[in-house]
Image 1 (tube, one colour):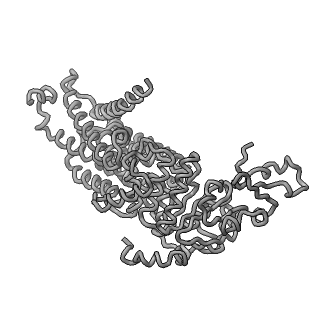
Image 2 (cartoon, chains in turn brown, red):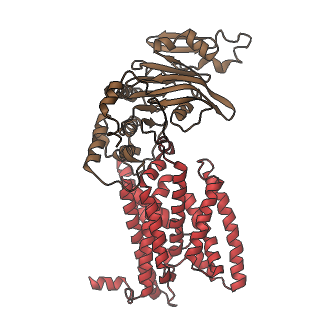
Image 3 (cartoon, helix red, strand yellow):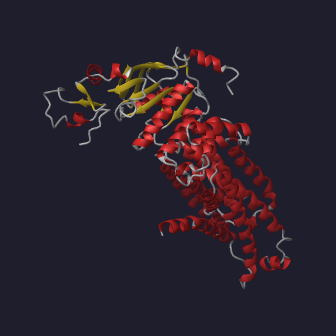
Amino acid sequence: MSAPREPRSGGELRAGTGEILSVEGISVRLSGREVLRQVSFAIRPGELTGLIGSNGSGKTTLFRTILGLQPAGAGRVLIDGRPRSRRNSLIGYVPQKFLLDPDMPLRARDLVGLGLDAHRLGIPLPSRARRARIDEMLQAVDAGAFADSRVGLLSGGEQQRVLIAHALIARPKLLLLDEPLANLDLRAGREVVELLAGIAKERGVAVLISAHEMNPLLPVLDRIVYLAAGRAASGTTAEVVRADVLSELYGSHVDVLNVHGRVLVVAGAAEDSGRSQTASHGHDVVVPGLEIVS
Amino acid sequence: MSAVLASLIARGFFSSEVVGVALLVGTVVAVVSGTVGVFTVLRGQSFAGEALGDVNTTGGSAAFLAGVAPLWGFVAVGVAAAGAMELVGIQRPRGRDLATGIVLGFFLGLAALLFYLVATLHNTTGAAQTVLFGSVFTVSSSTLPLVAALGALALGTVALLYRPLLLSSLSAEMAAARGLHVRALGVAYLLALAVAVALAALTIGSILSTALLVGPAATALRLTRRPATAIAAAGALGIGAMWLGIVLAYDSYDWTSGRTGWPVSFFVVSLIFLGYLLSGLPGLIARRARDA
């Protein structure tokens, strides 16, 4: 498709140097509320980046802005050094909560095939090359065993694999996944995380995963973009997940605790001492990374 | 073999021109309804299909007043209603049923006026029966070219937009992320739906047209694993119901003492319903076996 224009060796030469995605000073207002304020970060080929923030922190809005579905009030998004084109063929996207009815007549391989040519007009003609490419992609995400099953009947983890194959088959340079672990149990979640880490390393794809809980991702993350109060801090985990950086981001004091290898971000204690403990109850507990269940 | 056929099919069936036209129109309409109907079910737009069918009541009565073929009224008013639904806000998931219902209400009010005018000006009440419940036996052979053209238009639209439409039906978000024009696809589909429903209204009546649109499609979706197979199966099921319904309606002239025959639409719709019920049996039996 776009192969002749862009020799694959060129992509490999650039790997590790150029930035696939640069978000530069993005601000977005939604119905009067400033959801994102001056958000900037960049990610490079082969890197796995976690976009971490609590529910409502603007993760999905940021994804929509990167995809060109949400206009930004200020700033710009560059994909591979250029403003994004409408066809977005450099970006693969897996949305949050894609749940297909079990009655839907769509096999895993049909959904992956749509990733290849959903923009084309007319009815797809069966071709050996197309089928081989779909099979190869399904194998690559370890979904060969259920290639001919209805997508709606697959488990959450299996559906995630098929969706990743759908997003990846057109050979994008950037893969965006919105809360891919949200509906998965621990084991399925770990398998998906390992699969994504492999994809980033082996294919040189830049992978950006959003999550409200960072711990399952920490072992494989190269970088982290932490969203809070509409602003972002980015860098390596060690650079970002620190009490001073996150306190600055939240605009109030938070502690970062390490408990048995898990990172907990706890807010509330030293903040706004004038307010009573009950009044600031909502503040008290929840910050991403928190694993404490009361 | 011919003896069996003779006992099933009353004399004169194959030599009747009315039956010939009915079989031809029924086939075209079943294929169009099945194809468009699979997407109606996939997109969860059965209510829009039902509403566009009901709106054809207005188109049919308008055509009767104007003295033109009913199909012209069905298509013109159906497309206008589809446009109105789009303008009122059918593209927003939450406002979808609301927009459909509001437009439906207005057009049915218009139908009340038009039927009143038909009854007073033409001094007849037969128009309502024909428009509401239709009869494929009343389709004039002069309408055939228009039926063929509209059928080709609806089928062509779905065939051309097959892949973008399929992805946007599964997930509007994924389609938009790929740069597809989700709203334009929705409009194109709604127009194809209006045309398909107008054709169905011609054969089995405006308020029964959803049965042909959604029934065979829903049955086919139960039985197949692939969208393309579902479309083929829905078309085949629709043709089966159409043809068998026409045979039974033709036979029913001999059942009744007055030799008037029962409405063909009754037979077609009943067969579609029966098919849907039967298609649920395998799943039901499998569940029973598993639970036991």
